Image (cartoon, rainbow, N blue to C red; front, side, top):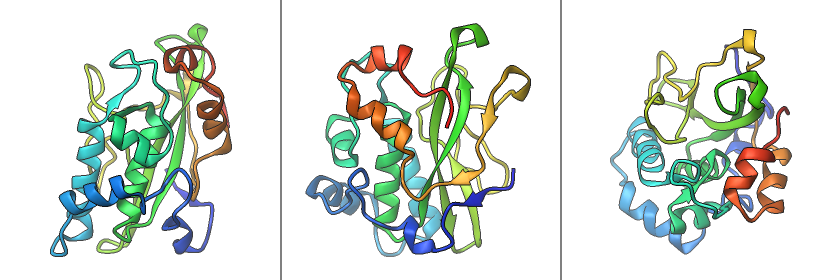
Length: 202
């Protein structure tokens, strides 16, 4: 898929915003644990990706009702849905000067079109050392989901099936999509939000 940057200014993918609050003390503390000055951009990206994928639980997988949004909150509580986890990964990587954006897929919410669709969030990062954008998905692995860091061939959590109405959106957004933020702001029960209120399209 040919990815399209929403902004032509690479610095827009390094900005600190409300949801990507890498100046927060909790984020700074984790940054000092994860990174050191001798790591390459690829090494830093792998460390951050695997931390968010493996150490931050997906709310649905653990059946938690708690809704998280801000990167610092996701880190502190160690849980969130894909939207929240993408905020934390962006925060960690932007703190290291690695441009990080937000990408989306339209997926079946469960296993058939009749059960509805949802918007799924992942990240795109620009690696200067190889001069390319790649997509990575730190949603969290489980049975049937095996996302890995890969520079050459994407190994995402989900492969879209266009015949069933699923879709890869090509835009790399510099900020989380407003539809994803609204749903996090408006709900206090993550399980109800996940089952009934996630946006179905962008």
